[in-house]
Amino acid sequence: MPANDMSQLVSLCQRRGFIFQSSEIYGGLKGLYDFGPLGVELKNNLKAAWWRAMVYERDDVEGLDSAIIGHQLLFKYSGHADTFNDPMTECKKCHARLRTDKMADPKKCDECGSTDLMEPRAFNMMFKLQYGPTEDGSSTAYLRPETAQHIFANFKNVTDSTNRRPPFGIAQIGKAYRNEIIARNFIFRVREFEQMELEFFVVPGTEDKWHEYWLEERLKWWESIGVARSKIRINDVAKADLAHYSKRTFDLEYEYPHGHDEVEGIASRTDYDLGNHTKAQDEFNLTAKVHKNTHSNTKLTAQNLETNSHYVPFVIEPSAGVERCFLAVMNEAYTEETIPGKDGQPESTRTVLKFKPHIAPIKAAVIPLAKNKPELVALAKSLKNDLQKLGLGRILFEDSGNVGKAYRRHDEVGTPVCITVDFESLEDGAVTIRDRDTMAQQRLPITALPAHLTTLIKG
Ligand code: ATP
Image 1 (cartoon, protein in one colour):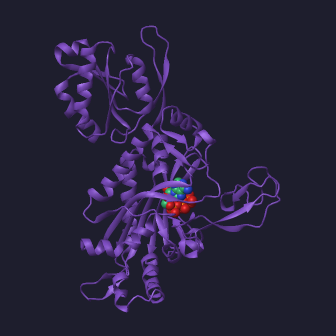
Image 2: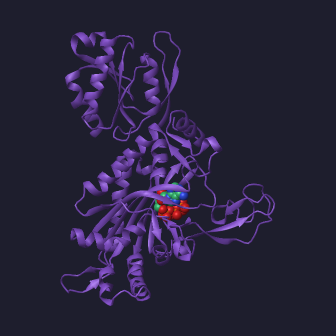
């Protein structure tokens, strides 16, 4: 039985230390969450899986980690300062602020049902800040609403330092900030989140082919982390709903507990961004009185080696949110099972997170059968240390003393295997491995564990 509403996931996340409300001791800030001991592991594993697939396993992508704060001109010429808006209305009766394009009925307040609403107005979602000690217009900067613009701004730095030419990509994982009118559905819509973005630069005229290619690549990736294709609906976004930079966008919509909703957008961004920043350079260099020769240094173009001419590459952008990915993976993994009773015992239930092993926050728990037997504890600790050195992720030493309870606790956080060290282990050098999904137990020599665990986690 999977999760049938969001509250089951919220409660598990809080109880087991995946996710906490941010600034909770002061009442919390809506739309901000902190990731706890297990949440940070899961998040890191998801990001590592993305980076591996998008950078390491390819020969045409470079990485980047840029600043989070952006120059005001970066977001002026990207179009965000003028057009990164959502339509907002306010209910005159209960004063709720509402996003009109997401309302069940745009004429009726979602909160109190009143029809007395203000005229919708455009609300810009960027967080503006004052950069440095001077408070005037020139000190305005923004928290980036997407990681993409810094990738475009670094296009020439990366191509100059790596000799890349289209088709190639620049990947980045990092924080993004949007002052959403309404933050809702747990970590689905928040004001601070992380994006995993690839800007893939292609020769103009080849963008449709690459767009289809990336759609397929991304669906394969979602499958590899445990989100079946059948759970993702592809929305070929209607022209009227496209973002200001997009020629065509495929939204991947996962079936969340609150309904199908976007987990990733794969946009064909044309030459909009590189083109705008390139045009902007002329204006900027003139006003800043930069010598004309410097213009070519900042043109975000690529060279056609056959004709020697320069062109502005087109861009395909697969962009996924880490939090939305987290929620999808968590929802897919969540399982409630009935365990048949044995020998006249009544049946029981258990909650299991059936994560793919490489995504699981804890890879294995090593448990000494008795916590007051120093030889057992010492053997379990040294086994934990040896397994940790394999570099597979977190291995936990568990000395709670109750193996049965430890198994259930680890089922609930998705640990693929528990390894129990008992008195016989001291004699025969073997341990009991218990599998999360089948609950089957087998005896294995300690010397066989590294290979066993590596195969299980890496596949
Ligand atoms: P939505 O229509 O749901 O507001 P969007 O189309 O504006 O999303 P994009 O600009 O395409 O989103 O951003 C790329 C990805 O970043 C999204 O697919 C999503 O996974 C993530 N993302 C965007 N906004 C948020 C948010 N407020 N909270 C969490 N993740 C977000």
